[in-house]
Image 1 (tube, helix red, strand yellow):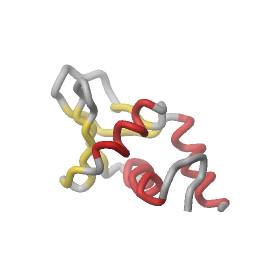
Image 2: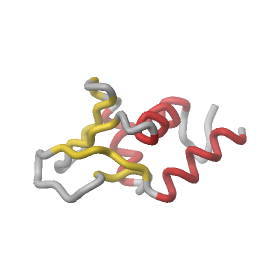
Image 3: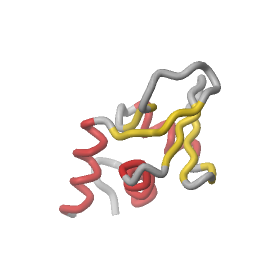
Length: 83
């Protein structure tokens, strides 16, 4: 299943973030953990650079923060439910 070129993996990552289970490590290339486990690095980069998720607060290089969905991320997650 794809929505706007996003896969079920993207959907699962967005849902985990919506559920408050994601931590974003900020750096040159962002990294995401869900429930303490590393997520697909390519998918994480795609979601961040597309503006679908961001850290909940400003952080320094290499620091982590709770990941939150942007308005666009919420809209994309909702569009998965319609398909």
